[in-house]
Image (tube, rainbow, N blue to C red):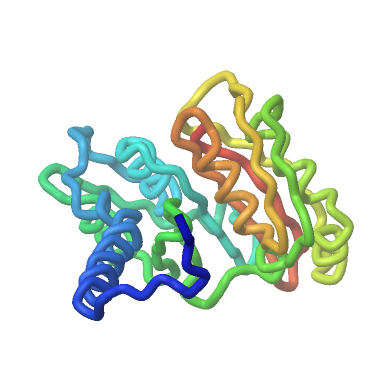
Length: 232
């Protein structure tokens, strides 16, 4: 049998059908990351007198989603400068509606979906530390979420970004939901990525829903930062 070396030519009607089908599949893949936003929230008790950050982390936990919180303060909160507290009822709402309700009462924030994680970020933009680019970062299968931050913030370019902003570590580890950290069991290699993307990848890799929080205090007072995992 002789095999032709000429390229395979599909009839135009078959090619058109293929393109339409491919576009439909691609659209489904692109929208799958947002599908859970319109799912109803699981049953949960009303939240009474909590911060915006706590409300977001709790909703993410009940919705079984991972993500992160970026908090930028003019100065560290003191006893005379308490954070605003709010109460919420999420029964009967979708996840999208619950997130909208959280940011509706706190104009400092907006929420966004990034790589199948949800982030609560300032409307005025995130810290330059989180947008710092890293050529390569590996998360190993034997690591836990608490170790990722320490390794990440020891990267030379990240340390440089912190130094340029005059930021000193302020260790304020606060666990909201969770317990003993479990090893990832899988590994992830990230190339040409950002600090924000690494944190989201670590959260998504965790065996249980995980939420990281990066807090930065700047202004005339002491310049500090800290990273913790309130949900893990």
